[in-house]
Amino acid sequence: MKCIACQYAGPAVAIEDSAGKSFYVCPACQTPKAIAPKAWEVLGIPKVRYLAARPWKAVKMKREAFEAILVHVPHEAVDVLRRGIEAEVLLEALGFQQDLG
Image 1 (tube, rainbow, N blue to C red):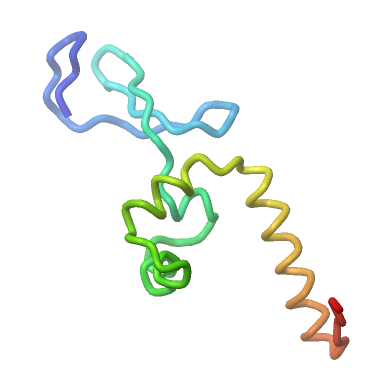
Image 2 (cartoon, rainbow, N blue to C red; image 1 turned 120 degrees about the vertical axis):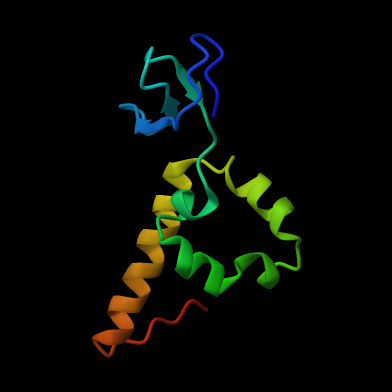
């Protein structure tokens, strides 16, 4: 990645701000460059697991279209869904059956 500000042509350094937004920063002049989070980062899972699960196939979408939508989903919404799924898995593991009607 070539820095526009100082013409540094080496690799940029990835950092995250306090709001959780990812940035690339030029190590020479510290100029930030905003980047969108990757789909597996939004879901909070490793890239290998994301690629193996192929969630875009479950909704019959092309991967690029699925990821374009996913990166705009608020992190709070993903967290709420994740907690709900984890609770269901935990209840099942403990032998409780949940009737969602």
